[in-house]
Length: 168
Image (cartoon, rainbow, N blue to C red):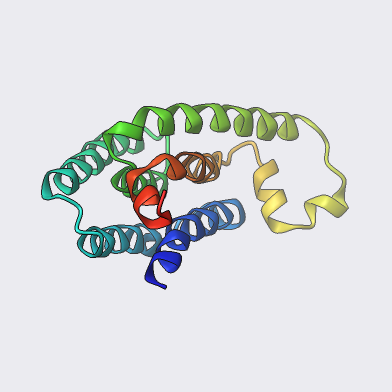
């Protein structure tokens, strides 16, 4: 039972963070906190070797430092930085490159779509939706948490945590 629930925690939090960023341009801190807590509980439950857990923690810390540099320069939001780091905790060094590549590709497509939408005059009926109106604002950022979440969902099934939980 705990295995089934654990298999859902990461994907559900990724989906939640993507929609939260889409609709509010904010990723709540509790998402990252629950991701961290759930990983640590799972590490204990699955009896992951301490060197693996330490390696994943180091990966998350390095990504947090890197993404806060990005945040400092205004390239990403603070929620994006925390989501990337807490996702890196689950993925570890061995899947970080795949995650980064997927996030870059999905983020590039997302950015092109939003920039293209901003170039067009959208009908008032569509702009009546607050989140679409905000996305259409040229002064607004890009909800990059969507790309981070999709990349996390694409990468997660390759991880050792997924393999241990699903019995693969």
